[in-house]
Length: 62
Image (cartoon, rainbow, N blue to C red; front, side, top):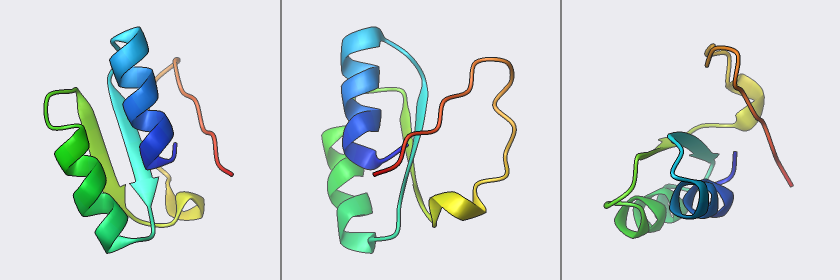
């Protein structure tokens, strides 16, 4: 999911989240904002996300 939504989900629902962005600057800012959360921010296009996250998987993009 996008970096902003990753932060929102982790902060409000106490879930582990992988966020993706194509902007290195946005990745840096999101990592700083999410430092205290179980969030990984990846620098990649969401269309290239081929990892398996088990039965509870959600993909949102805007």
